Amino acid sequence: MRHQSNLQEGLESQDLARLVHDELHIDEYKSKMGNDEDIVVLSFKVHGKEPAVDLVNFIEKGFDWVLDADTSAGEMEDGDYVVFVELERNNDIVKNLLDLLTDLVPLTDNHVKSWRIKYHKNNKEYRADPEDLKHVIPSSPAEYLRAIGSKEEVNQLKSAAGLDVDTKAPKNEYTESLRIAAGIL
Image (cartoon, rainbow, N blue to C red; front, side, top):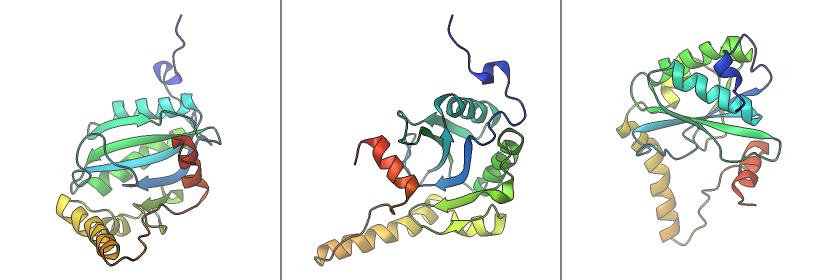
């Protein structure tokens, strides 16, 4: 008989406590559902395959605005997996994100105010404050292209001028474990 995950039995309070890291990355990864300017990609780091699968199932079944959720194909060096969540880029992004984090509190024991949020390739951390996030996360394709496209244009200009282009992700424990999991190192 095939083993059922905890979700089939029903996740209970704090089933994912200490398993879902309180760091959320936004638009760090490319969308598999469509164009990056149309889709927001959230990424969570989760300790263990089963908890990652449980989180994916919880998110996919609990939020009708989620387009897709999936886990990384492989385990990172520290035994963690990345859970990817894709949603439409629109004016409800911040509301939907805060609703998701609020609904995760009973499962993870990560309170909304404890989340550290990073946007794209920016090393700056943000808290789950609606006003801050509205200024950080582009809510339309045009805003995304202005915010991200301008960096790419600068890199193209640097390249054309023969200057070094720094487009690599920052080196920290999280990105290094992702590089290892992807077989880049």
